[in-house]
Structure formats: structure tokens, C-alpha cells
Amino acid sequence: MLRRAPGRRLSGASPWLVDAVITAVVQAAVTIPFIVPRPADLPPATWPMYGLTSLQVLPLLWRTRAPLTSLLVITAAGFGYLIVDGPGQPLPYSPIVAIFTVAAQAGLWQRRVTIVLGLPLVALGVALRDNTAREHLFAFFLFSMVYLLGVLARTRQAYTEAVEARAAELERARVVEAERAAERERARIAREMHDILSHAVSLMIVQAEAGPLVVRSDPDRAEAAFDAISEAGRDAMTQLRRMLGVLKDDPEAGRSPQPTLAGLGALVDEVRRTGLEVSLMVSGEPQEPASDVQVTVYRVVQEALTNVLKHADARSVAVRLVWEPGALAVTVENDGAGVAVPRPYGGSGRGLIGIRERAAAHGGTAASGPGAHGRGFRVAVRLPLMISSGAEVGK
Image (cartoon, rainbow, N blue to C red; front, side):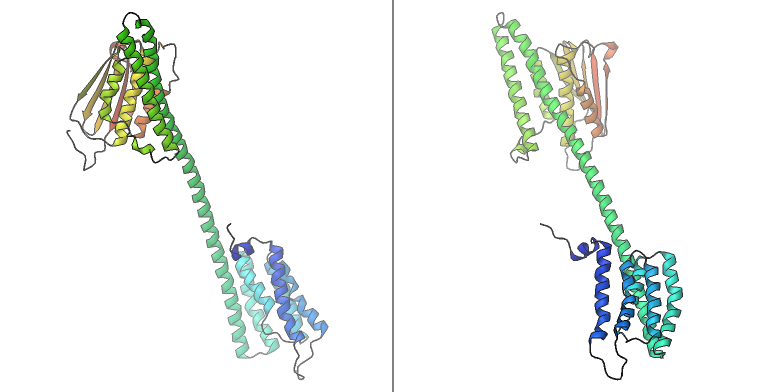
């Protein structure tokens, strides 16, 4: 359980309560000369004198709400006490507190009034009492030090408020950034889930539709179709377990590698088993891009092939990787009817959106539309490459 510091508890208390406590403490201090036995040569400490002394203390109850007014009332009561020659006090407790409050909490014009009137009134008070150089010097020094302490307290309070405001602003910025990061992470997970499930389910549907048609005429092909369904399901389950493990902060989850460019061949072979003619062509000088770029390329090709299976009604599809200086261009083009003729199980359009989001995340571009001569459909992505000094170029 966290405990608040004493200063925090005091600053959070009611102003009336704080002023009442300070007033009570000052009242106790001015009472001491009236209860301590006095020498016979000094005037007696009478109850009327004690009442006049209390008049200098009571205005402290309003010191934070009316600092200058409280100081003026205390000063007037103090001069009355000097005129009737009441018992002396070791220090002017009430004026000290009132001057400090004005310097620490009052407005600019109130502070100026205190300085302009304070010094002459201090000189007059000393003149009415002892009127010695020593007392004048002490009174001026005390007034100056108390006022300076009030100014330092005001400066410290302003600094503290500025620091707290800055901390609050940073906390708000941190919360906003955390929310944005969570939103980006949710979008990333949604893309991964879509890519994994959409690809696996599309393969399973295509194979399931083809299986019953050839189960009697070509049992081997039917068996291959059902094997492909089983393999696609197992692969999807493996990747989903890995993603769920990451979400659960499972240390075992990170052991399953992310897809890379090296896995494109296996991906193409997997799609070929559906009966679709798929070609993979690579040109240019191969490079070694960052792992996240490789994942993006793999997912883009995977999603494009999935869309072909779901929507294009195509016979062939060409996957091309063109290595350019500082960039990688990826195109997936089919000879089908395009996305305007969806298959019965339809789609939500999230695939193409996910492709654009993945490309944008790397500062790249993505475009999609009809293929050459208006036939089929084409997805084109271009990603800039940041090659590290230790990467192997030209592998």
C-alpha cells in the first residue's frame, strides 16, 4: 500500500484546516509571555492585553483567502498593542506569517503594496518601541528574509506545478501511444490471422470440392486432395498455436520460425496441388532483406494466391520477384476472370487491404487491378530494402 508523503498530505488538506492549525500554533506562541512569571519591574500581563494580542492572531484564519487584508489588520492591531504598551513578544509571530503568505500566495499588486508600505511601517513600529539602530537593522533584516522565503516558496510551488503538469502531459502521451501501439498490434494480428486462415481454408475448400468429383474416376487424385486438406489444416493449426503462444507470452511460442523467402517454393507447390498452374520466377541480383520484409513478401504472395483460389476462376498464375537496386518488386498475376466473379464462399476484401497495409508499413507501395490486356487480375508490391552491413548480397 502506497503512503503519501507528509508534504502531500498537508498540501491536500482543506485550506481552512491549515489556516486554523497555523493560527492555533501562533496563538500558543503569543500566550507564553502571559503565563510565564514576569519580573517585578515590567508591566503586568493582563487579560485585556491578552485579548489585544489575540486580535493580531485571529486574522491569520483568512490569510490564504485575503492575504493583504489579513496583513493590514494584523499591522493595525500591532500598532494598537504598541500604543498601549503591552507585554513584549520575542518575535512578531503574526506579521511574520502574514508577510510570508503575501509573498508566497498573493498577486503582483498585493506584493508591491506590501513592499512599498512594509518598510516605512517597520521603521515606525521600531521607533515606537525601542528606536535603536540595532532594532531597526534586525527588523529590516527579518522583514526582508521572511519576504524572500515567501518568494522562494512561490517559485518552488510554480516549479512543482510545472513539473506535475509536464508529468501529466507525458502520462497522457504515454497512454495515447500505448493505445495506438495496441491498435497497431491488433491490426497486425488480424492480418496474420486472416492470411493464415484464409489461405488454409481456401486450399481445403478447393480440394474438398475436387475430391468427390474424382473419388471414383481417379482414386489417387482424390486421396492426394484429402491429404492436401489434412496438411493445410495441420499447418494452419501450427501457425495459430504459435500466434496464440505469442499472445500468451509463452516462451515456447518463439521457437517456430516466421516464413521467409525460402518458403515461397513450398507455398507455390502447396497451391499447385489444387490443380492450379503456378510458376515462380526470380530475376535480378538476389539480396538478403530484413526478416520482417521477408515475412511481408511471403504473406503478400500467400494472400494473392489465396485470392486467386477464391475469386479468379483461373487456370494459371505467375509469381515474379524482381530484385532492383535497393528494392524488391513482387507481382502475382493470373489469367482468370478477376475479382469481379467471386466463388460461392465469397470474401470480405480484407486481403487486399492487408496487402496495402503491409507494404505501407515498410514504406513501400501496393497496387492491384486487371492484368495485361484486361485479362485476369494483378497484384504488384514494391518494397524498399535496408541491407545491413553483415548481410550477404548476391546469394
